[in-house]
Amino acid sequence: MIFVGERINTGFKDIKQAVMDKDPKPLQRWARDQTAAGATYLDVNLGAVSTKPEDMCWMIETVQAAVDTPISIDSNKPAILAEAIKVCNKPPLINSSTASQEKMDVFLPIVVECGGSVIGLSMDDAGAPKSADMRVEKAGMFLATAMEHGITPDRVFLDPIVMPLKFMQDQAKEILEAARQFLLFSDPAPHIICGLSNVSNGTTHKKLINRIFLTMLINNGADAAICDVMDTDLVHAALTAELVMNREIYADSYI
Image (cartoon, rainbow, N blue to C red; front, top):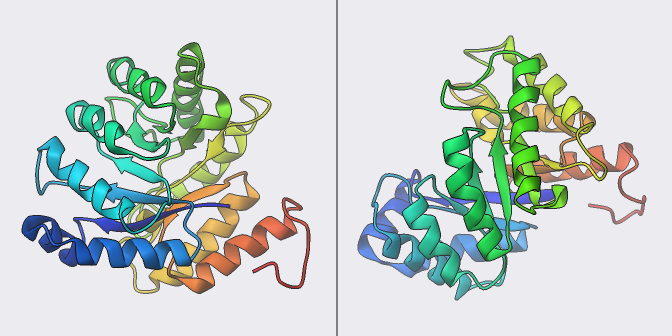
């Protein structure tokens, strides 16, 4: 299971303040804690705090000074990405591009330049599709275009666009079905990822909903998630789901 630690994000008050003050301690503490909890990548998100590439670069360099875990650069601004890839010590995961031709024409060459991987959202400029079929269409377009750029499926993470269960309950089954069909695109198949916390947005039992939905996504092919890796029950549920799906060999110490 590929875990992308979600916590180094200026959407959280402590990270926002740390970036504004240029205080490295909170970023480095979360980098160490998430790495110790098993994060494969650390998502670094500047958000709306700044549009300056140097601020994203400072965040990445600060994190890399504490751990050697690869970075997921979370930005939809090409100018920021173009500079951020230069300071990454390891090939990053670019988060993310839509299937809009205009977006792919800009984002995919950046992925090629850094030798990294990319998250492709199964949507275009018209917004998130409502049906599994439309998600599959957009995701297929993204994968095909990425492969035309020489990016192999093992470096592509397709996101079926998770919607809040509280407000769009009917979408859950469409998301699961879309993920299942993503597996049929290629051999080997692309990775399937989601921004997990979206599903529990506005709910009371966030951790429970996240945990159950992730195990259901794993049953439908997902092998990655942007999530709270500090939630031990969530991580253990994901590892157990992969074990049940015969993706890992059983050992008493599997968690």
